[in-house]
Length: 186
Length: 225
Image (cartoon, rainbow over all chains, first blue to last red; front, side, top):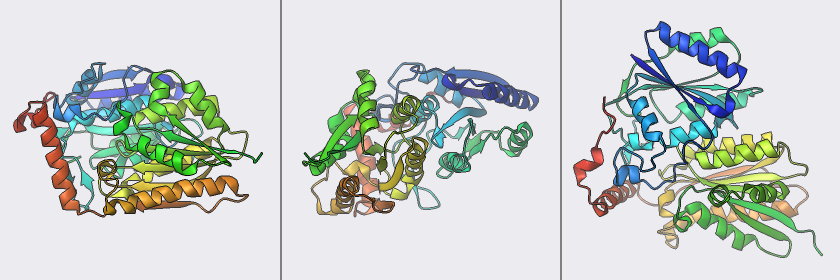
């Protein structure tokens, strides 16, 4: 089994290093071969909403800056863990770039979820489990709650938690999560 | 000379062609609605500032403003990375405002349901709190893809009128001793959802045809295991 661990090069704090070690150890203990990627400032261009990844080169972004390697590594993994700095309650800019540019992995078109909301259909039969692990100094409860809502409220099959400095709590949360590939609409 | 209040209209669509960007269109509309002898609206284009490395000028405009209106499309249920970068850097440079200032937002989503923008609006609120500003609300819109193409149509009034009211409200607040209470409006185009889906889906296929793709090409799986 493969896991892909993404980090933000602008927020490599002491706590990040601890979480990196903790998550890597946890995944290795569960039999995962862990590949890591740190996204540096300016490494990924911002998604520019051109939709060429849907209507010109379906499934691939036309900007050749390394995002294809990231998307390929994600799609070939069983689990993807984002070690994500929480900024204003959402993802940091570097991590958000990789999330925005996940768009090629979906299809264009509109469809309705079972709860009545709109979504884009999946391009693939199944996807890696996705875990968003937020961290940061001085996060408020509101920011932590918002981070989880952003990650989970409009997506099924996604896991999210916010680190509050407690290794055991992080491990316990990871233990409860599905870390196998997931099928169906995301 | 009257005391002139500054309102920064932050246009934050990542699109290369800003003539096709709803956020830029709305920012310009706000500029024309707000401009008078007591209000100085300033359009801050995030893409231009980042691409041309003019963020210092943009940050100065925002730091000096009495009100900031963030106007952006929803990307993956929150702010686009480009605006996140811009605000992250702004907050690092100007952690706290040195004067009373307020923040509003207009968030537009391509899906019909405007409530999907709620978390992005909460992010704007967190940005305001973190930088010492007062969050006063905004407008969340659905069917954002129709705003430019159908801007004059009667069914667009349900979106355009609340947006215009927000700009007017920001102007009144800037001039008042006490702003109006926080208000977040959730609005969408009065247009059949089914028809919106049909038109949207036909649009994707039409774009693919222009790029000489056949229907099965749209379903390619380049990263299949």
